[in-house]
Image (tube, rainbow, N blue to C red):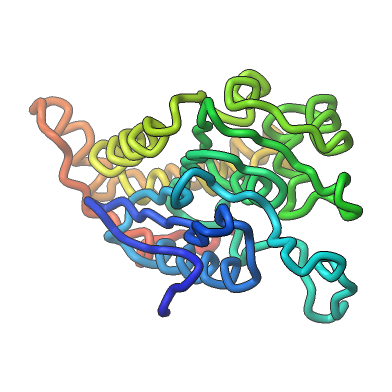
Length: 269
């Protein structure tokens, strides 16, 4: 796919997806959503990609919806075709860890898309908020599901129902982000995490653990225990389960062989 509103590159087994409408502070467009979904699908199916970073070009991560249409920004849409999801698939369905390097402002759908990721790093200089109730619409991109999982109902209500913006430091204190750093350090910090994953973790182990992690709040403890046991049976005895302990004993980097694309336990879904 020829990308226009995003940029896509793979660097040392890490895919870097950059929202790229710099002249508009990377405001979200329908084309951006389609391209982002395509990039996510590429990352999911490519065994050479071990982790994914979502970031923004320039000074912003994503400044929300493109409101250049003014009164038609949120005009009535066709019920059969409109979706408030923002992107398909969402980041949590990608079988690789997805890290949002929020290098600047992330508001509206800019933040709700980041909430779909596994981890987020904020910028001290950035402003973060889910402003949709201040624009006559409502929060989107599954944020009524993702945000309470991260910070609980009360804090989610504070952000979703007031539409207020917080600083990067406040975002980290609320639990929206792992931490807040100076803007120029956000992407390097995300790359450090991604490279650690690429070098030191088994691809299939991470993919399976991520899928169960996102499913677990909807399961009982007994159901989680059952799935952990069954999925251990899928992993134990395989080359990576041999390589991990041997590499540790030999004080060297592991040489992983598992393939998420070819060894995925479809029955686990």
